[in-house]
Image (cartoon, rainbow, N blue to C red):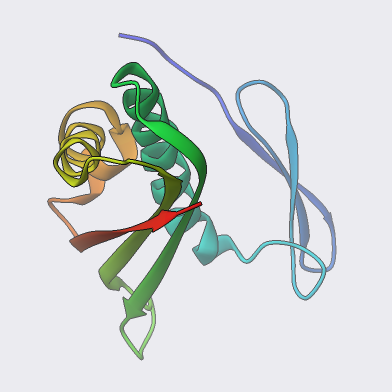
Length: 134
């Protein structure tokens, strides 16, 4: 089992310097940094997108670009629990096979993306995709 260490350092006021396990910095504050709660859906779509594009390349799909977005529904009262995250994969390319795209998303979400697999027991996760010629 691998162990990765991340850290958060309080800088001042409501400013924190986060570091991933490669020591890459992320500033968490508002309005000039990321909101802490946004890191959850960002991690989810970042992890899934990484895997989807890797799988599509292995499938020799001619992907030119991909955009992934997430809409989150959270409770209105503290602790503002995430209830639903809807993911949209927008994939641009030529002659993309919708069945292969769906297969890549299914594999990413249910086999390879650790964030997705971890969250799916606690949050309603939904996804869909659009193929755009380009």
